[in-house]
Image 1 (cartoon, one colour):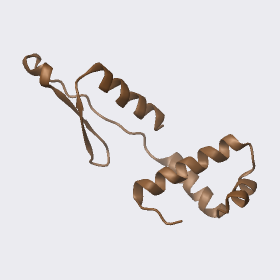
Image 2: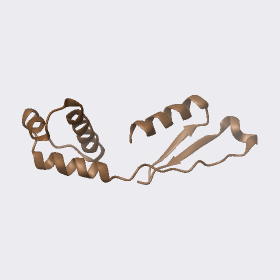
Image 3: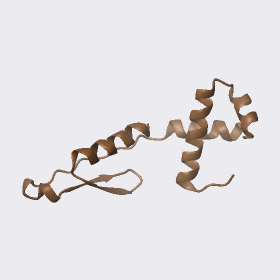
Length: 100
């Protein structure tokens, strides 16, 4: 199963999580899922070694706060533009926590 970049990472994150939740040995899980054990170990190590996402909160002037947007700069160079609303911030922070 060939996947690109983020899709591949997400796929293996799900596989590693499924194995941990299954209670099966890695060998048994990989056999049941038709996965190469070597690939499983490689991805598990890679995912554990990844640096956590870091960001900086940029302050805005109060006079333009109603139209303000926050920018979340990810270590990979991506920039997220987020409306400065409590609900939007809650969703972003929940997604960041879930990605750990």
